[in-house]
Image (tube, rainbow, N blue to C red; front, top):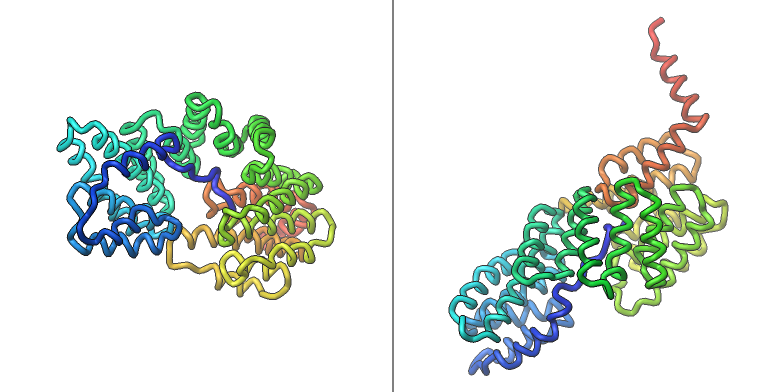
Length: 402
C-alpha cells in the first residue's frame, strides 16, 4: 500500500540559510541552555527532541523570541513520531507567534527573514500532520499558506499535489506536479514524475502514467514508487513476468536502503506484491517471501499478512491484527486486509469468497491506493469468469418464483 508520493522535505532550498541565520540569531541562555541546545540541534531521535524541548519550555527561561522555535521544533518531532494531534497543538503556537516576531523586528532583516522561513515550515509541517490524520482539506490549506508565506516553495506545492491526489482530485494534483517541474526543472522531475504518474493512473490515463513512470526510472533507477507503480499496472494486466521484474527490483532497492526505517510499510508490501505476482504466475513464491521477510517484524502490521501467506496464521488472525484505535489506520488496515485476504482466497480456489472481499476492498480503500485499482481489475476478471457467471445464474434461478 503506497500513497501517490512521498512527502518532500520542505523548503530544501533554504534549510542551509535557516541553520546559518539561527547560529547568529540565537543568544546564549543563562539557564536551561543544555535543554534548549539539544531541543534545537539533536534531531536524530524525535523522542529525545521532545524530551529536551519539553524541559526547555517547562523551565520558563526560554526567551520570548525563541518560544516559537521551541514549539516548532517539538511539533516537527511529533510529526516524525506520527503523533499528529500533539504536533498540531505545538505548530498552532508556532504559527501564532512567528508573525508577532516579524512585526516586532521589522528593521532586523535577518530575524524577520528567519521568522518568515520558520512560519512557512510550520505551516508545511502542520499540513503533514493533517495529512497523516487523513484531513486533506486542512492539509491543502496549510500547504497553500506555506506557499504564500515563502514562494515558490516547490516542496509545499508537491505535498499539496499529493494531498489533492489522496482525496481523488487528480486534476489539481497534476497542476501542482506540473508547477513543481516548471519552477524546478533540474530536480522537480526526479521527485514528482512518479506522483504525477499515479495521478494520471487515477484519471484512467494509463498511457501518460506509463510515460511518467518510465521517465522517472530513467532519471532514477532506484525510484521505488515508480517501480512499484509499474509492477502494479502489469499485475492488473496479468502480465506477471513484468510485474515480478519491477516488484523484485523494488524489494532489492528497499532492502539496500540504509536510511529507510525497517518499520516503513514499503518494506512489507513490496515483498507481498512480489509474492502475489509469482504465485499468480504459477511460480514458487513462499520461499522467496520467507527470505525477504526475515528482517521484518512480522508481529507488527502488516506483518500478519506475510504470516498468512506463509501458512502461520489464518484469515481470522489477520482480521484481529488489523484492528487499530486510530480511525485512519483502521480504514487503511481494513483496506489491506480485504484485498490481501481476497487474493489469498483466490489463490486457494475460493473465488466466491475472493469476490466478496475484493468488493469490500474496492469500496473502502482510499481512491489513490493501489489495492483499490488492483481490486477493480481482479473483480473484472473474476466476475466475468465462466464459474462466477454460472454461480450467479444458479442463484437467480433458485430465487425465481415457481
